[in-house]
Length: 428
View 1 (cartoon, rainbow, N blue to C red):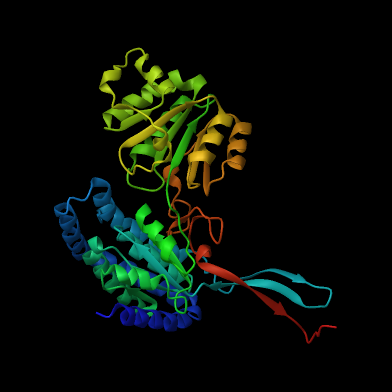
View 2: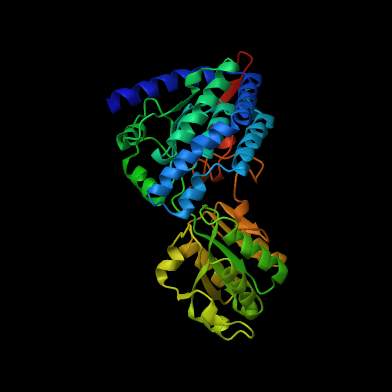
């Protein structure tokens, strides 16, 4: 296969399809989404069989548990995909909305209309659900999309792509509005991120090495996040029951996601009340704890807790900067909220951070001063997700400040253009 020729053809077809998608009506887009949802329900067994082949191959290659978890299409994952498609269909169509209309002294009205970005390239690794989430959001927002999934999910993505094209055709929309790159050759990625004449935005979903490579090579603008180094800070005015629930869920609900807590910060004044109980829970779930000296002292001195039964490792400076994506948690005792905010803004990745506190003023300070895309009070970082935020699905999470920030849903896949409504006015 000539990669340049192949990818140029993909880009040309996507650009052509994007023009048809930009003028597509809401009803047609919603019909396509419902048709895809019905097709997934109908073909659930076939999808799971295709996914099982991918999972078996990944296990043979010795890929780790976090990777396998992201790759697997469980019953819950399939239900979430179907519900996500229907949620996106139920959302208001942003395309064509005109807002901020204002009369000017000259008599003209000036406002802004929401329009599609055009052609979006999605580069992702082991998550087959991204194929559906990306297709749903790009279709509803009037864009065409080029999907380049990882070779480990090829059977799953191929099966899903066939159902997407079936739904598009059934709704009278161009089949090329969603294209899956059919080669695992890495050169296809290099070509995709430089095709500025055909692709308007790249959204990468994957590990740090992938994002770093794309940052070096891309000429097309990107919506991205590099790391998910998320924190929970337990304030000395926290409700202990809430702290135990939030800190357990933020770390152990799923290990391989970008919104999983990687560092736990505990105020010195509450450490002896909350840290031993948390450590017992983490021990029972097989979580290794990388602790600073103060946290070690609290745990080794806790009454009724055998510290030798805990997986304690002395934390290093590098632990505060690490996204583990595994059952490993860094723990640090801090003097208070000032120390916590300073640590987060120094070592965090501006993704998602939470505080557990009953003090309103401290909660508001945390919301204002932590410079992250999502900041939470008394809630698990695992909620940093487009589906949980009511976006229907997300195409990714951005910790950049331009053009979108946080979970990227429909509005993040659109732009604004100025519109002027006049009555024959001329400038003098």
